[in-house]
Image 1 (tube, rainbow, N blue to C red):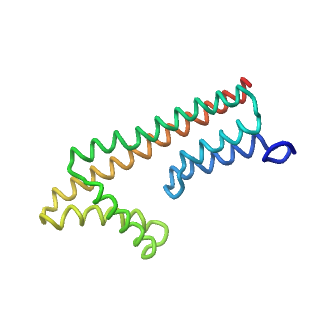
Image 2: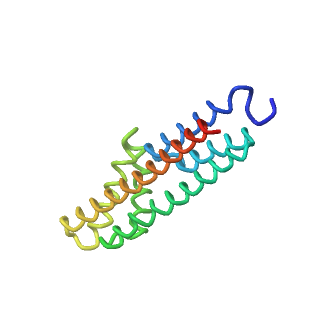
Image 3: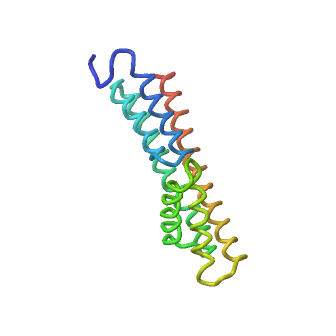
Length: 165
């Protein structure tokens, strides 16, 4: 054992970490994109080759691009629709409360209800509140999609690195 991992683990352990990262994106509980990048970092550290570090650097660029894209693109759409960051924070708090009320799907239900109520209560306009709620949900799905695409590109880059190095 020369590195952090037991003999034979330098491929399957990072792969497992990346899989956990991708699951963390789809089920937004873990910082999935970061975990995916950490899997590549572990692999680069374990291989210790220049090629491994070049693959990690490429993956790090994909990570930064994914993080920037997941905030900038949906954020622009939310701003245009009039959905504030405060509304999203309130909705997230309602989602957390929803987890305790309705197991498994409570976060999602609470989040949507929180978004809707935050948009509805000031003006009592159901149509406008629903429009903002749908815009926020589309933005969140877009953000998750961008993060997922970045993670998949990181994994593809890592697999190519495995083959080449």
